[in-house]
Image (cartoon, rainbow, N blue to C red; front, side):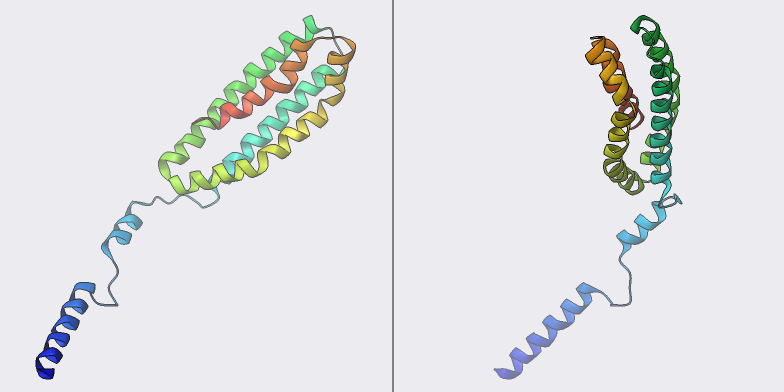
Length: 165
């Protein structure tokens, strides 16, 4: 009886070892996945996000320069609209690059999204600091909520447009 159990045990071990394969072999699925991965640098997404944030910061600086002399709202609003239209074109081009990254390497794209999530608040907060005197003037002294909305919300929409999916 012990001999037959031993034979069955050995047979089970042989079948199990054949089913698991040799230890030196690499599985087929990871090899196929490695073949489909493109040669996108690991920081390519961060470079694009840095460009988006730098472009946003540049737009904020130009908006602050327009508002610095405290022109009337009727003068400032068209200037801001033109500025935002110009930067809207730049942000659309950056968005195309951002989405192309998603098509090339989804993992780099995900890292870029995480990088944007980590860095976006700093730039939006810096925008508020840069434009705080304009907010105070147009909101508290003039009561021009349209200008305040343009400076506080619509400018951030440019940033959102650059990373929309």
